[in-house]
Length: 321
Image 1 (cartoon, rainbow, N blue to C red):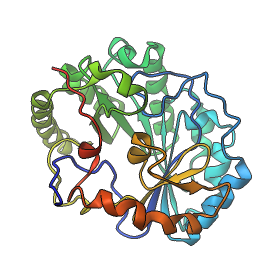
Image 2 (cartoon, rainbow, N blue to C red; image 1 turned 180 degrees about the vertical axis):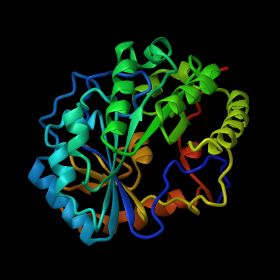
Image 3 (cartoon, one colour; image 1 turned 60 degrees about the vertical axis):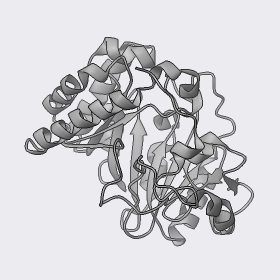
C-alpha cells in the first residue's frame, strides 16, 4: 500500500519540460565530510565525459524536452571547459544553474558568464564563519573563498543563491548565517539537513534528531518571514510537503540525473543510494531518448512506496541529538 511520507522533494522541477541534474566531474579540491558524491582531490578526471560528447548529449536532451540543466560536482569549475559548455547552450531554449564551492571563480570567470544561458550560481557556504565551516569542509579558507566568489559574481551581475547544509556544529547559528548573507546582498538561500549518502553516510554524527529538525523547521519558518520582508528568499526541504510542491515523485518524469562518467539515472539521490538499481544506462553507449524508455519499469515500485518523496523509506535514518 502506498504510504504518505513527510519529507519534501528536494527538487523544484519546471512546470513544463524537465530538469537534468548533472555531476560534471567528481573531482573536487575539497573533501567535505558531508559530501554526497565522495568527491576529493584524489578523484581522477579521466572518466569524465569529453566536451564534445557532453555537448552532444545536451543537444539530445534539449530536443527531448529538457529545459533546465543543473551542473554540479565535485567542483564543476574544476572543468576548464565549463564556461565553454554553458556558453554553447542556447538561452532561448534552456536554462543553466550551477552549484560551486567558489574556489575557481575568478572575476574574469564571473564576467564571462554574464549573458549566457546561466540563470544562477549556487555557492556553498556551510558556516557563519571560518571555524564552523571548517567542521565539515576541513579547510578554514574555504569560507573566505566562498564569500569572495559571492562578491565577484554579484559584482558581475550574475544572480547568486547560497546553499547551507545544517549539522550539529552550525545548527545554533542559523540566524547569524542568514544575517551574514543578507549583508552581502544575497537574495536567495537554500537550507538543508545532511543526507546520508556518499561520505556523509560515514559521518552519522552530522545528522540531527527528529526533535532538533522540528525546532529548526520552526526557526526557519520565522526567518523566512523576516527576510522575505527584507527581500531575501529562504527555501528548505524540512517539514511536510507544501501545496506548491510537485505531486508524487518526479524522478524520471521531470527530473533526471547524469553522473560524471555519463551514467543516466532518474534521480541523483536514488542513484547515490543504489547505483545498480537506479542506473538507466550510460550516455557513452546510448542516447538520452533510448535510455529513458527504461524509466517506467524502474520507477513503478518506487512510486508505490509513497505519495511524496520515497527516500525516507529507502534510506537508513541518521540520528544525532
